[in-house]
Length: 263
Image 1 (cartoon, helix red, strand yellow):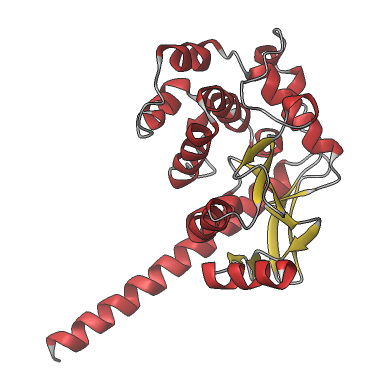
Image 2 (cartoon, helix red, strand yellow):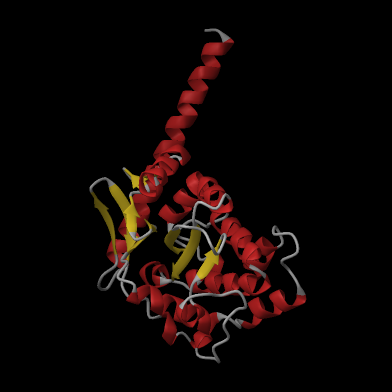
């Protein structure tokens, strides 16, 4: 057998191994969410779209969220619970609903996220981030709300810092069996990958959980939105099917969807 054929076979084997690992991970997530949910937590697989589904997470009752409400600088929306990225005068609005522990959100961000950002940077739309923490209840732990509180500290430093930290979190999302996002020291290590983010104020806010009450309020607003699954993406109120057969659409497919709505 030639070296070229050996290489081709090895590549095919690696692709099969990667696909099998992705399927096994999705199956584990589905079992944990379905078995661990006391009420509305399921993993929906319908019309070829897979996403995490949850009801109120109850994170507002967490002890860390019981302190005074401090809203980060640069927050937007009702009560400062929305993060807006992009040009304020953009003619369209892309609403993105996510949970930092959601594996399908990770697929979307790591596969299509660059295209999503480029269209915002180009002025096609501005992005509204609506974040949730329901997977803490469904999977156990506190990683979603701890990561969201840290993201609030990043937002306080600047919208661009939030966006970069948001991307770093998804690029380093732990396996669903791990709650490493619940460790503030781990989050601070990840924050070190965002140039200029780890100011003294940022580090103190993360260590003290300054924005934990804000994270609880952000989740409460998510619960009121009527959106039940993550990721959910809407452009000017029209839902975009960003997942197909449990996988994120390609950047090209996403761009085509946007053009269909914006003309």
